Length: 269
Image 1 (tube, rainbow, N blue to C red):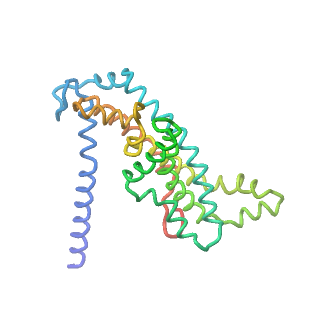
Image 2: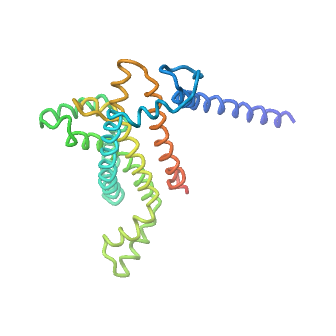
Image 3: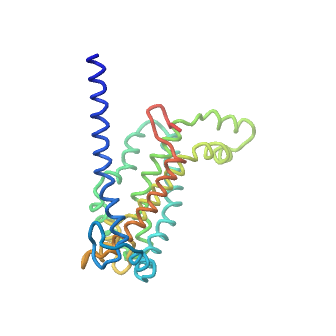
């Protein structure tokens, strides 16, 4: 009886802690979204009146449109490039020699753990020497530096659970090595590819620190938000943040339904 009571108490305590953590994470976002619907010229919670005034302001503003278009264009270029490069790197790590594989893997994913301010400063120096700062020639490689590691991880996790004998069977039936990979391997590891693409798009679209070092006149959406915050905290910031949150949440939902979770024994569908 005592053990049963202790078990119930522990379960309730776990639920309470989980609820507190979820509230701590979700509450600021919920407050931000509610504030974005204010009809006033200032932010307050709860808003004295509600409306779509600031959403209309953001959607019709040339500055916000241009910055959003640049962020979208950059993310659309970076995503397929990082997917192609990251997938090839994942194949190389999975099928290549065992010697030095762990060191090479750690080197390839190191941009994930390095401070972005350090990466940004280093990339800025290179762009300055090449005279390509404040251009797509600098933005795209810089964003690829931080998006490719995510593709390597997601595709690499899918390849670990892939049965290579299926690829070998296709080759024994007359398929070329490339044909076997294209028609057999890639369709099977598609969830890992989708996850890598979504991660790349989100990270590139939201990237601020590295882009801040490289940009002079060009402004992505995060840079435009930062520039606006330097002078005054307007409700338009809440509206833009809510729209960005909606895009990110939508892509995350796709990732949850179409992607996988990597477990110790492979990929769990």
